[in-house]
Image (tube, rainbow, N blue to C red; front, side, top):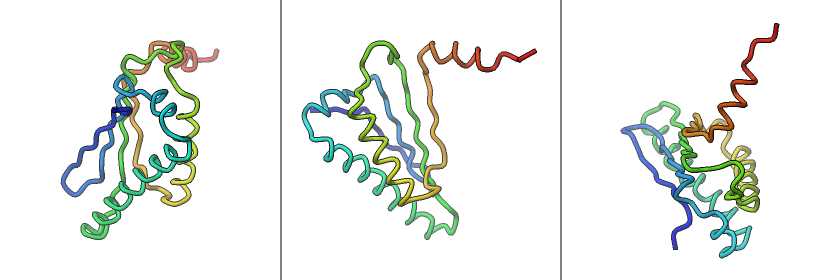
Length: 130
């Protein structure tokens, strides 16, 4: 059974680029089928795998290699209830652990196809105050 729409790509002498496609993910089914600790450990394992790749490339090229994550939120609705709080906690916990283990490992996270509510929030936040 497939739970996550996660794909990895590489560029020559660059770190991994991880693409997370929310529309192709079923975090609720994942959390229903597997214990919290297993999901958390798997999330941490994927970061360890990325770190090993970046560390090897850093040593080979003598240039710091980091990873990039692209999160595609196409088809996600803020109000649909699709997001699973258990998965968000497992991912957040593993992210906190990995930031302690691998500081400055993530070059950037790019979020694309945000739900329209975020555009409205951004517009409100960027209105000049007079």
